Amino acid sequence: MMRFALAMMAVLGMSSCGMVTAERRPYVDPVTEAAMAPYAVNVVNISVPRTLVVSEADTLYPTADIVWRGELGGDRHAQVGAVIGDAVALGTGDLTRGRPANVDIAVVRFHGLTEKARFFVGGVYSIRFLLTIRDPMTGAVIDGPRLVNADIPYWGRNRAIADTVAGRQERTFIVDGLARIIRDELLIAKR
Image 1 (cartoon, rainbow, N blue to C red):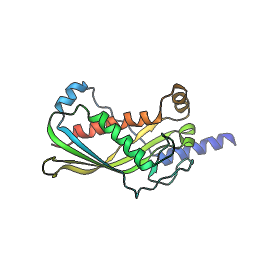
Image 2 (cartoon, rainbow, N blue to C red):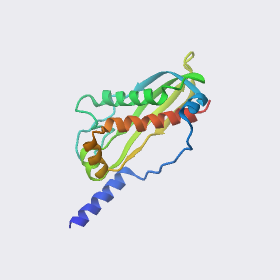
Image 3 (cartoon, one colour):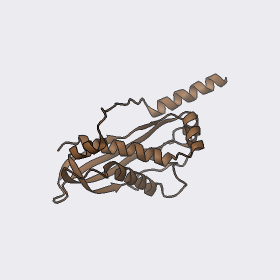
Image 4 (cartoon, one colour):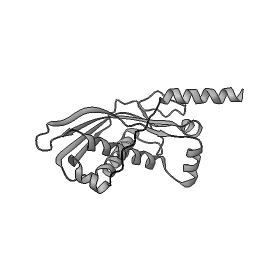
């Protein structure tokens, strides 16, 4: 009975999080990469619409647009905006060469892992946002809007326990992962 229950939890976890494939980029020195960037990021506007539904349910896969447990309770919309803001600052801080650009990010989904999912089966932080790059002088769209799939896999249970014991915060994990994704999106954007 116990094996059956564990197998069902694994199947539910995998079916709710979908398949994830990782693609590796060849290593490029960050300094060289920043010098080759197509954009010099001026201003970033982040929007987390209040129409996005928040869930605080501790189920394996709550039905909601925003599921976030990386901080104590509070305004989850504001917390998600701050997480993305920190990721953008980290990912674009040295993108100062290239065509001047303003970046608009509109969050469509920020579905993290509940405590139950994180400690039992793991899964994927399912994050989606619309990315638009604009000319700072005219406001004209240079690129986008395009939907960015910023999924970040998290192998739960043992990793969650090890992260907790080591004091590694869930927020830091997400900010670091999103910073890489946002940076990659801006580096591959069309000029």
